[in-house]
Image 1 (cartoon, rainbow, N blue to C red):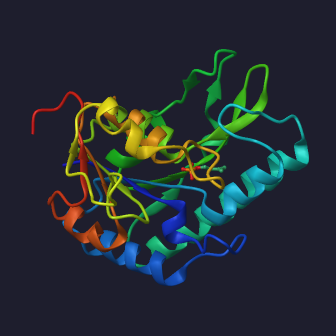
Image 2: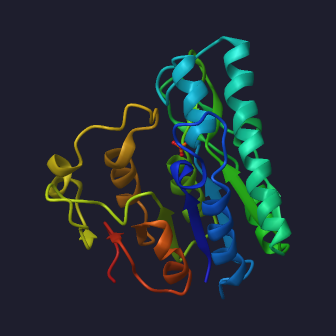
Length: 250
Ligand code: IP8
């Protein structure tokens, strides 16, 4: 069984402290991965948290608004590389054969904003026994300079490329919440939850929960959104939180 797991940036960083790793949360996530039966059949993606989003907001860069400011590119990409190194180091220390993969060096958006991302390095690393660790990043964007590439977009590109059986999005919330704050068990169509999801968080330049759900619905593998406490259960094959399954028969 192959798993693509996204660790939300807000889960593994201190959201309100620029460039600060939440060591307790990171080590809990790392232990769950190291102890799980999934073994090396996992691709890890992490988001930006107080590393990427902090600098992206400062330079006015999002998935659609680009920059030609080289200082901005270095600040955002550099911060994401520092967070990636912290995640890879923590996984390595726990015995997981983690290796970094930096999307800025590989991906591109065309003038219509359509993303093209080579994935042969990821599939090859995986089949050679490594655990690739990718991250939300910047990407070269024709006509716009460089725009943000969210970890959610990476998950959507990677899941079919590695033929993932399950996709997990570990978030700060225990699942997708309805207007009453209750976890929605299953989402099969965006319209059913659109009004409850509302707009995105002001500090999240990548589209918040609404954008996440819309993108995950397009996958052929079921995607689960759950909180940090449920990560061991997800890795054990259980279905915590919200299952997002557009085309999938469960
Ligand atoms: O947190 C965004 O990734 P996300 C990465 O997965 C940057 O949306 C550079 C802000």
